[in-house]
Amino acid sequence: MREFGFESTTSEVIAGLDLSGRVALVTGASAGLGVETARTLAGAGATVWLLARDRGKLDAALAQLQAESLPGRLESALLDLADLDQVRVAAAGLLAACPKIDLLINNAGVMACPHAETAQGFEMQLGTNHVGHFLLTGLLLPALKAAAASGRAARVVNLSSAGHRYSAFDFEDPNYRQRTYDKWEAYGQSKTANVLFSVALDARAREAGVRSFAVHPGAISTELGRHMDREDMARITANFPGGKWTFKTVPQGAATSVWAATAPELEGRGGLYLEDCHIATAAAEGSRDGVQSWAVDPVAAERLWQLSEAWVGESFLAGEVHA
Image 1: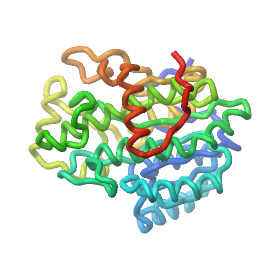
Image 2: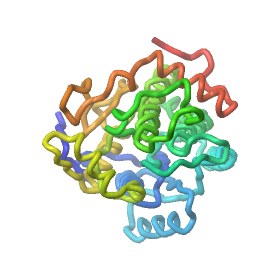
Image 3: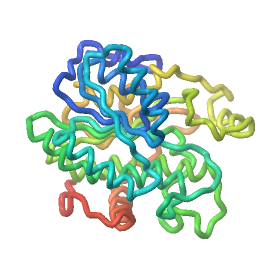
Image 4: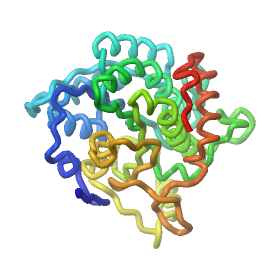
C-alpha cells in the first residue's frame, strides 16, 4: 500500500505509473503548479495539453517542457476563464482535437484580487475559479465520457484550497451586488464552490465513468499570491496553529493534484476533498487540516450546479443525479 503525506512530491506519487495513451488537460499551465502537473503527467507518458490565457507565458512554458524531452506529447491552447465566450471557443477546439479526454485538471485560479468582474459580470474570483471551469468541464463532458467508455474512468480534478474555510457559498449575493466586497471572503466562497462543484459533478457523472475530486494543494509560493501584501500574510498566518505557516515546494504542492488524477487507490471513488495526498477528514477546531461541512453538503452542491447552469445558459447531465 502506497503511503504519502505533506512532504510527498510529484515524482513520488507518479512512480511506477504508466499514462501512455491517456490525454490530460491542465488549465493555468503557464506557471507554478500547472507547469509541474503537466511535466509530471507527460513524464509518465500522457499527451498533455497546456491551457492558459497568456500566449507568451504559455509558449514559454511549452518550450521549457519540450526541452526536457519528456516521453509524453505536449500541446497548448489559449483559454481565458474570465470570458465565457472564449471558453466556448477553446472547448470547441479542444473537442475537435481530443475526442477522448482521460484527465481534466482545473488548476487555474486567482486569489485575493481587488474587486473586478469577468466579461459576463461575475465577481472575478468566482467567475474565474468556478464559473469558467464549470462551463469548460461541462462542454468537455462528451470527451470525458468517451474516454470512460473505453473501460477506464475519466477524472476531473478541481483545485480548491484550505481557504474555503473563509466563507460558505452565499446564494443570496454571490457576486457582491449588495454586500461590501472582501477579497478573502470572496476567495473562500470561490474555493467552496470548487468543492461543491466536485461533489455535484461526481454525483451526476459517476455512472458514466467520470469521477471528480477537489484538491487543497497546500501553501506554495507561486504567482497566485501576486495580490498579497504584508497584512494579508499576517491574516493568513494567524489562522495556522502557533501562527506558523509551512510552505511546500512546487513539486510538493502539485503532488495532490497528480495523486487525485492518477492514484489507483482512488479507483471507484469520487466527490471527495483531498489534501496532502490523502482523503481529508472533517475540519476540527484549531486544526489547519480538513474540510468544512458546508463545502461537501450535497444539497448545496446541487443548488450551485443548477445556479451555475443558469449562469452559463447550458444544461449538462440533465436528470443524471445519483444518490
